[in-house]
Length: 257
Image (cartoon, rainbow, N blue to C red; front, side, top):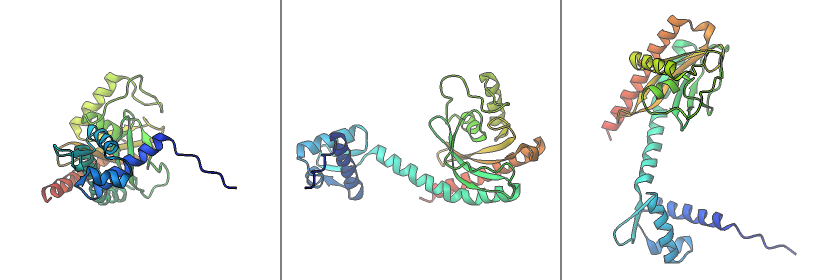
C-alpha cells in the first residue's frame, strides 16, 4: 500500500506561488488580478495579498485600480543589469584575448560583489607558472588589483573589521591603503605585488558603463618573477587601453539603443 506523500511546507507553497505569479506577469504583461488568481490557483483576495507583497519590493506594478499588473521598477532594473552583463561579456572577450596574447599572462574580466570581487571571464596566457583559474572565486577587495580599482572608484566599500592578510605583503593599514588608492586614481590602473598570494603580481583597469559608473575591471596576473616594476607598469597601461576600448564599445551600444 503506497503512502500519501507529505504536504509541502507552507513556505515552499508560497514561494512557488510567488515564482508562478512573477513568471506570468513577466511573460505576458499586462495581466489582470483575476487571471493571476486563476493561473496560480488561489482566490482573488489571496492573489491581491500576493501582489501587494511583490509591489512593496517593486517586482510588480499595478494601475490605480489594481487590475492591470506589469513588471515593477526593481524587476526592470534586474533585467537591465542582466542585459548589460551579457553585453559586457561579449565586448570584453576580444580585449581579454589581446591582453593574454600580448602579455603571455592570464587575463580576467572581474566584477564587484558585496564584499569582494569575482572573475566572470578568463583567457589564459602561454605561461604555466603562476597560471590560476580565477573563475567564480570571490576574493577580497583590498588585496586584489580589481578590488583596488573598485575601492578607488567608489563602487565598493571595505567590510567592517580588520583587513585580512593572506600574503606577506598584504596592505592591512587603512592609511597605507588609502595612499595606494590615490595612486590608482592618479595613474588610472591598479597594481598588486605579492599581496593576495606570495609570488603573484597583477594589474587592473576600470571598465565604465555608459552611465559613467565602473562596472568591471580588466586584469592581467602572473608570476612576480616575470613581472618586475617596469613590466608591470607596461601591462597596466595595456590593461587601461583595453579597458577604455570596452568602455567605449559599451557607450556606443547604449547610444545606438
